[in-house]
Length: 66
Image (cartoon, rainbow, N blue to C red; front, side):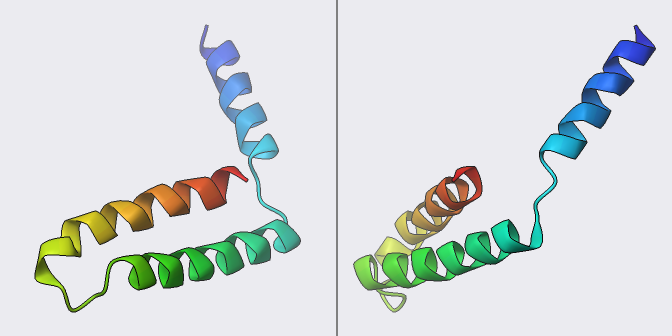
């Protein structure tokens, strides 16, 4: 059982390892996502701070998944 779990974790680590080109694309996507969230929910508005934070998290997840 331990061997199976170790093999699964090792396999997922190898599959999920980002290449330099993919990492660059993810960073570029995240920069665009932050700019988009800031445009939709201005940083100076106190009431939209939580919404902007969720926007960051959702868009970061989308960038990482793509």
